[in-house]
Image (cartoon, rainbow, N blue to C red):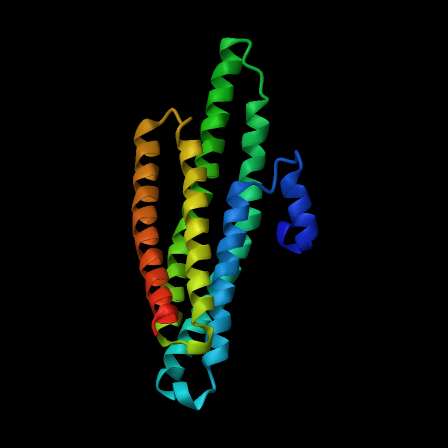
Length: 211
């Protein structure tokens, strides 16, 4: 059964168990998808309202992007699980002889690379989700502005979680030049995403708390 076909209870039970998947990366993708879905809800509560006729076209465009983005993050829940399986198997390879050690190192490097690239994708999608959430906060229904803020916060958490899954894999890579390049990409996404999500949160917080 694929990850997104599980019930919430099944997913959480497997997450809490000793099973290798789902793990942090897949959970980050799922949380990101939830954030995007929540933003999309704000959009759907906005469209068709006379009060927001001036932004109708913009909100519909945001909704289309959000629907696509949510599905991409859902797919990354499964992709992360599939990326981790070869890595888990590689850890168990023997290294008693020089030949075995060399083969294990080769297999590990390939598996680590794949396992690091998936959370990079998750981070990229979460940054897009934060951008959408902020737009929903600015132009969406004021009755649902708190949900737009929640969407930004969820996508930020998913972004940060995914970054840790990049660094845990790049740390073990022997190709340090490639590992450093991946880390640099993750750091850029992390800096941009957290900053923009915090800006969105403060925007919503001020709107809600202003008298």
